[in-house]
Image (cartoon, rainbow, N blue to C red; front, side, top):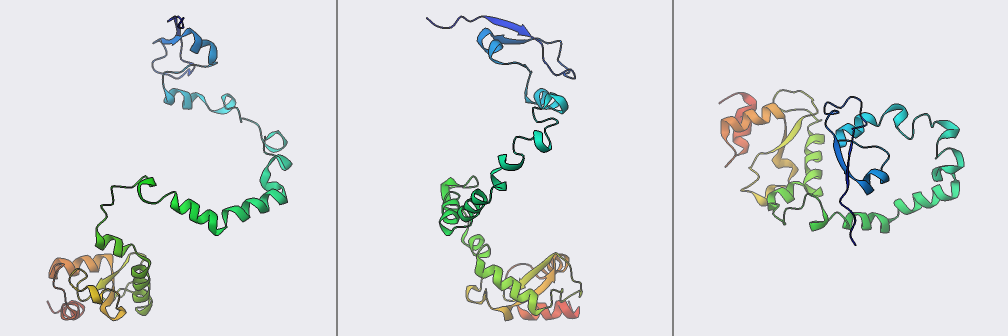
Length: 202
């Protein structure tokens, strides 16, 4: 036989609940199984503070992970843990667990080729090389800020073979880079345009 569909009206245990006068209907077996009852998770988390938290006051020796109870305080276990998480096998396993369809950001392999290129290590190294050559300073306003961008003098999309040439890059701050493209656009860019921009001859 199935369980009886007996329901009991209970009150929310959160004293600050705005709907405390609204009863919560629970099945009889659920009422017996749980010590506290709430309308939703918000009510629960508002209530689950201070003395209502099972970890309240459990500091020092009262903590369940005090001293030898904490695996990280036992040299042998700590060394084993560090050896595990720093091993190449573990790193590869964790990396593989986040690849492709296993990754929460997976969108069916729709990442554009140019986006993959700009996310690559080769491209990031190119940017760093351009910044280092220009002493991490915008060549237009001579300001050194945390918002630097590496601009391709021969534009990125039309000149694949020049994308990783340091000589084809120049450092602009975010504002100056935006100003350059607002004047000359984002296609068919050339070093001549860069020179005019730096000299203020527009």
